[in-house]
Amino acid sequence: MFYVRNSNSCDMMCRMKPITIAVPFFHGPLFEKMLRFFVDSGLVEDVIVVGLEGPSFNVPRCRVLASGPITSQHTLRRILDSVKSDYLLLSTLPQVISIEPHVLDKVLETAEKTKAGITYCDFYDEEHDGNVPHPLNDYQKGSIRDNFDFGALMLFSLSAVRAAIEKYGNTPAVRYAGIYDLRLKVSIDHTILHLGEYLYSLSAAEDDSGNEKIFAYVDPKQAEVQKEMETVFTDHLKRIDAYLAPDTVRDVPRLQTKDSIPVEASVVIPVRNRKDTVADAIKSALSQDTDFSFNVIVVNNYSTDGTTALLSDLAKKHDKLKHLVPFRTDLGIGGCWNEALLSDNCGRYAVQLDSDDLYASSSTLQRIVDMLRQGHYAMMIGSYTIVNFDLEEVPPGLIDHREWTDENGRNNALRINGLGAPRAFHTNIMRDIQFLNVSYGEDYAAGLRICREYRIGRIYESLYLCRRWPGNTDAALSLETKNRNDAFKDRVRTDEIIARQQLNRGRGGSVNR
Image (cartoon, rainbow, N blue to C red; front, side, top):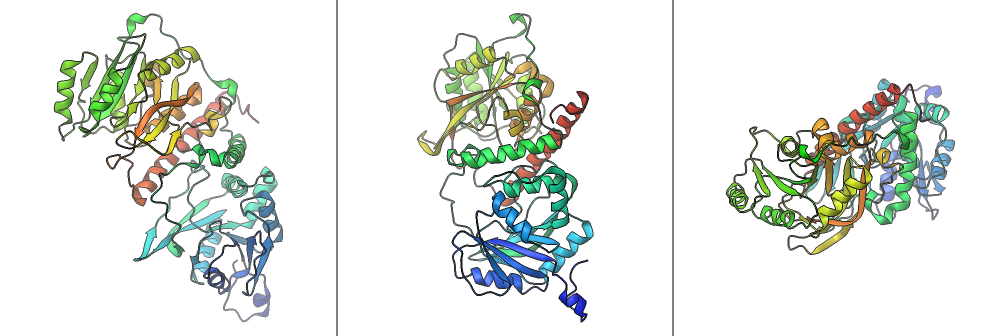
């Protein structure tokens, strides 16, 4: 049971309180105030402040752990070795957390009743014009990326932590992935519970709205961090029997004759309401210099802004341009891709080009098809450069996804949130698999499904110009939309993990441990 604060019993009053809190030290006038928020609760035994500099402050029941960072195996082990309470409330964000003492009662009671291994809750962002709700996603089997948003506070059950360590081993000697490793181990046999209430406030982080967002897994500055995350994650896949060994890929089936295909390659452009950009995209596709036949299939998803008339005019001028309008009116981007794949016009390979982007040169299509031919790949992914509407390079510039390796890319793909662009597919394989009829993550889901069985080839030089402008479908997403997108990809990962586990069992049991 958790600590009963209003008991007059000496035994109760002298009992070890159930929660120890660990937070990273940061400079600021509100740091001590935050510590007092914590210790004012009758449930808190003590607060561990982690800092390299050995910070000093005058708050009772707070002690300094000269170590760091809090995410390292060394620091985490020292914290766990020193905690005698039943629960560890862990914060990894150097931001001011405002929490009322009674809130911990609710979180602790929920953790006790559900026997959750980790409990987390929604919070408020403190903004200039008041507190803004910050909801979080529920945790599921596929919520295995290292940047899953738990907010600022995670309540660990120490009994669950110790059981996980005893069963799956200590955290390896990592500097950045210690908490990630612990979370994954706990999640195997214990619930990770999202308490859907707004129970604390978090000070606003430093504003980075003027910078182009870049995922950590493609940031060269994060290479060391990401290698640790990949190692920890790969070990997790082996523990849950979802790891795929390098020698378990299949060969791509070959067509017997060229007569069964209309062209060697088709550039596929799904479009809806892009009259300002789609003509540039089509011109880029038609200008490709190749030693094979190709066409351009534009799937017009009932545009209403003049795109339809523009495409009709262009199709009259260019025999290679195939203007398709689906029969169905409920298609997302994935559904439009299926229309192209199943069309009689589709070639041996189907190559992506978004309606507001361009190929980097007239040789892009040749390079893509050469790789698909030579490497016996079911899918090929290139690299792209971020540009503005005027095609001027803007930060972060080249996105090349060098985190991918032939040996482990198909496993690490489950940890990251995207695989890159441009994408190209072996048409016969994608006709069997088909895309999900959605307008977000359809490409990621297809990539995971393909690499479960087949090889994916990579080109790390820029083949593609990805425009950033206000008309992008991913421009200025709301938190609600981001959460919905993340939950969808977590669902995709959940399904893929289950499929890979079944695949391994179908091979006669685990062959990966």
